[in-house]
Image (cartoon, rainbow, N blue to C red; front, side):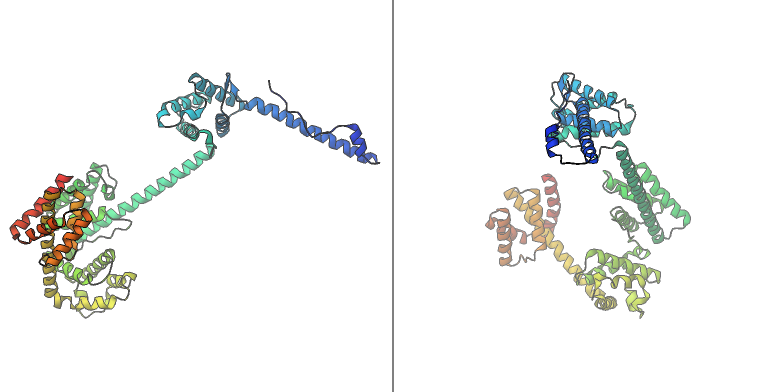
Length: 482
């Protein structure tokens, strides 16, 4: 039976009233009387509210004492859906019966992934108690989320975001936001696909009919692989296969040479691996393999003298190709040896004026101007350096293969040692460098220094044919360690 809390702090002793009352007029007496009545009325209302509260929010149902946090959960749930007190009683009765039948003390006992089945049972029971349509996915999702929140929180449970209508509005707004963002991204990626198609079409001088065929080829391949744009292929399980399919289809359709097909393949990868901004690299000048290779080699040699990041170098090279093609030149260095001012080539000038080339513009223009005159010397130095690097890499491969025979190293250690031997400036014709390399590698990988030095000396006596064989052996070794 519900109890009424006794009313406190109200003193109705008439003597006390008389004692505290000075000689006064009837108006003053009336005021005191009104004050007493108001106090009585307020405490009466409080008492009634306590009776109603205890009657409605009592924790005992079906002879089972509901946990206070479970009562808070059910009360919040009823409020969330705008349900009447009658429904709240149904919820409390339903939950108490469920917990009692399974010997649970509270919903905290069914938290965790192992109890998903029981959480689902509670959700179904409460759904029926609230008369929620089993096809109303919004309400069911909301209900399920709140049950999981209660079960996982345990005795730390405190409800948040409990207005169903507000939650649905927020959900709708979020869905609209993501739908708009996805639509925007799809549009952006489609525009990049168009850039790719334009670049390939311009490079191989395709007419409108051929360009449409190119577009259809790409779209058909995307559809066959459930892709909305070329970028979607990035990270796909069949990433390399998709590249090969697109490349092969374009090669066959437009009868491209092996070199031209290679150009298209590189541009496909450029498109697929592009970030926020895709700038096509392919250009009609690239079709002349001899000039293009020479241009690229000389450009790289010149730029290697300066500390310029690779992205900025790439942007400059693309800009120079663009200006050279648009002005009818066959080489990017024609921009600097025809007696014209760099200001007449807007793409190139824009990059040279950027922050990456700060204070280097004049030096680069001079180097580019002298490029043709020094081209033979530049290319010979490049070839000599590349040959030395390749020889060094081959010897490093031989060394790690022989090391593995002695020490059975891990794949990671083999790769680290080979990289170290290749990039460090060791001259293995010098004993000092042999012992320095042997000592440093033995320290890093806990190997025998003397054996390491002997292996290096053995590789020094190998001929080119023996060394070439180790390039293949190294690849086989890495595969065997995988």
